[in-house]
Image (spheres, rainbow, N blue to C red):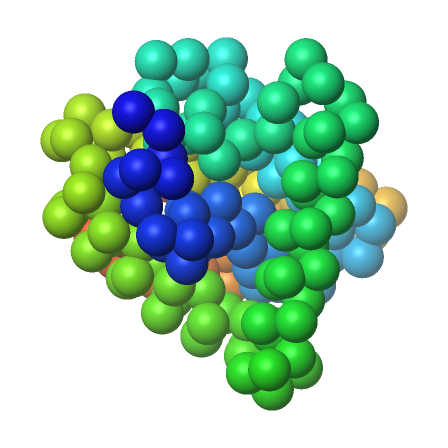
Length: 178
């Protein structure tokens, strides 16, 4: 059954955009200068890795771009980005704090959608995927230090953001090996 038959447009939008929002919020939860670029790359990589890690999850594969048709996937990504930007503008979100608050609200909504309309396995895997993105971003670059020397693997701000997101998604996932 296609996603369109199981979920409304707004639900598909939230299921599609929440993982990328998670990556963005994690990347900006602690200023890391050039490390933010590494973190955004880790977010994108984690997003696309959902196809490889969860090939049988209809929700994950349904919200990810069709990698066999680059033109179609680029078009779909552009539409989704425009809709996401319009939504943030409509809600008056202009700061990383505002984006974080919106993400937590969206994560709670996603958790409810998954509880009501997804199988237990689909919901568990979606949450693992989303929190995997958060963990990969948190660990992508050291925070603090000078020119990559010193610093910490995962900052207090990232640990706090991770815990808030996990709580909002309704999962007990914790950062590992920090």
